[in-house]
Image 1 (cartoon, rainbow, N blue to C red):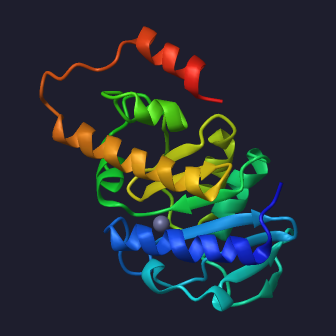
Image 2: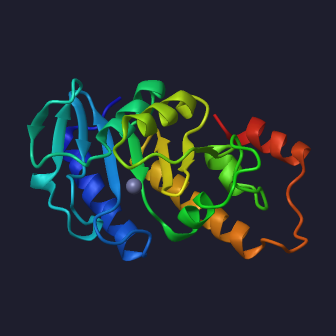
Length: 212
Ligand SMILES: [Zn+2]
């Protein structure tokens, strides 16, 4: 099932504004896309999440041709690399939200699981969050690195850059991103403190029970 183009545009404008209003992004650094039957609706390059205009959103064909609106975000290939490996997903969001971006600058002990599990909710929404090495924004190597692990990881942190999340609906993508940001905030607040993490057994139970 795909959203119609107009529904996709309405949802992007509404959720992007909500993301902006709550301080999860500033300036024109965030981008968001929704997969429709003909291709993607995407936030244009150099636009701010707080002030999007539905008529200006980029409509891009499956081969990357711009069909309508302004040119898409420079991170279009990053989104495409993730959709290619996650054919059931319909929405991708990339932010430079403060806490996930702060965590992206710390060394990864285990690149397949970089956010410590203090509470159940991130595991329930996205499972373990992976990290890819730093590449310049828009670099083909960044899209390749994300594409390589996207099948197993709907939530990825790009080192020294920020988070990207993929999901089956716009709503669940926003919730996943919010949970990732909150979990990174907790991880940084608890850094160096003797806090209890969930055990491997508790995490396995969550993955079996909640994560599809
Ligand atoms: Zn970025």
